[in-house]
Image (cartoon, rainbow, N blue to C red):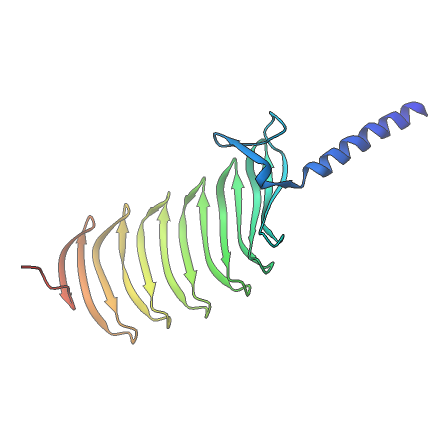
Length: 201
């Protein structure tokens, strides 16, 4: 019986320590390289870390494992609504990223792969109109990109290759009328037709 109570007592202590460690203020952390530590320990941090606004509302919340950010992290607006969600793997952003307005509407969505933007990214106005649609490859602008006027109509459309504009880019006014065409080669403007900037003498 005494042995049973001793084991129970030990587990109770361990549980209470783990529960306490799951609520760590970000301001108490110190960083050595890319690892986070508690100021009172030489061990990398483990548990849930939060940061707060001056009002006391939670600003950001997520988990550290062995000093690195892991799994889902959430950032909040001061009114308590979610501002963004992102997953981490071994300290790097990895997976779907979502950004929200204070009223909860989706502001942007994209994807990370080991810390770099990857695949299709989109951003929206509060009215739900597109602001841009584009693609990344390992953090580099790649492929078709489109930007939009505030009313949702297409403003520009063209291609990136290795972070540089290449080929034909078309530009439209907020009524949908084409007003300019530009031709690029490795980000260098080769030709412009329509409403083009005047060349300086």
